[in-house]
Amino acid sequence: MMQAIYFDNAATTPLDEEVLEAMLPYMKGTFGNPSSTYSVGRMAKLGVETARKKVAQLLGVTPSSIYFTSGGTESNNTAIASAVRDLGCTHIITSPIEHHAVLHTVEYYSHINKIPFSLVALTKSGEVDYANLEEQLQTLTAEGKKVLVSLMHANNEIGTLLDVARVGALCKQYNAIFHSDCVQTVGHYPLNLLESGVHFISGAGHKFHGPKGVGMLYVHSDLQIKPLLYGGGQERNMRAGTENVYGIVGFAKALELAMAKHAEESKYVAELKAYMKQKLMDAVHGVGFNSPENSLYTVLSVCFPKTSNGESLLLELDMAGICVSGGSACSSGENSGSHVIRALQKNDDCNTIRFSFSKYNTTAEVDKVIKVLQELFSLQTV
Image 1 (tube, rainbow, N blue to C red):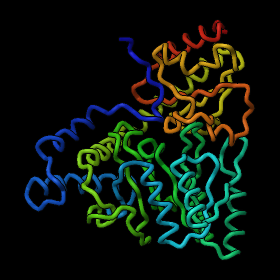
Image 2 (cartoon, rainbow, N blue to C red):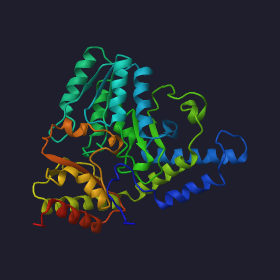
Image 3 (cartoon, rainbow, N blue to C red):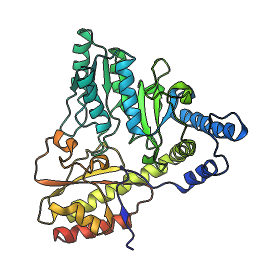
Image 4 (cartoon, rainbow, N blue to C red):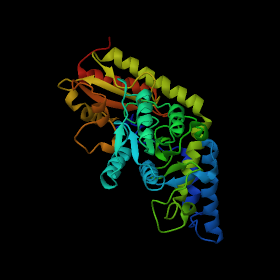
């Protein structure tokens, strides 16, 4: 069987071997229920709490502010629900390029709870217009509204970055609650959450070589919120259900490894992205890029010219053993196209492909992809 070239790491990443080794004892010998009082249960509980302390330490917060969840979607839902239900937020500001785990949740509360929302303006490159955000906060606060601002740290399709500290300062100035979907940046950037001014963040283990099915929600210690899930006293009475012990252990180990090697690995991945960008410009006439210069170092959104081959570009690449996406993998079953690209008001004369990179990718893989693309577009290297 042909060895696949995997360039869709923004969708999910391969599990790090050291992470698997850390998880295995909790799949085998230390398999107890953490709520049990006997030794096997206590050992499992110790694994969960040790992981919580490690994650909290790496994010610059107290362990009591970290809650483990099933992933980024649950964390986003919990944060938004808590802001509306428990913290008295009566208006939500978000952006048109948020992940659907945020946008659909905001739309739900707008429909069911009649909580109005507004979309912050974007620059041409897809970055948040901070002047517009402040203008909205100023107007809504003057009207007596309690505002939730929900803006992602890095966009999962084009990689635009948010100045989290700047938004945190604005939210503090206008007494707003600030939630940031950090699914693409936890494990990829050093984060100090107390310094950032954020009230909630979401993370997911499988985005940085940890296991699927486990995530985290940070809740600022000043906030008092209620559970989203009821039925047990797990997660300090905040999330009912038996903990995913080996997933939680794996999440913490993956984050520990990512931060320990961040400087060298982020430099390597950023150089790999730059290498591919240059190779694409050399190889494909008329290629463009949706990712701005200041963007997530793991993501490169490419706009290929439409040709007879280009219409089926994803399929052709798949047949060549190259794994990429047209946008968010979470929406791959939808036929409506990318809401992110639509929000950027890009013209319809190109096919968008997202390449996303990890420490396991190589320049040799990039060269193979470029060769396939040259053949598809019937062009030679300039």
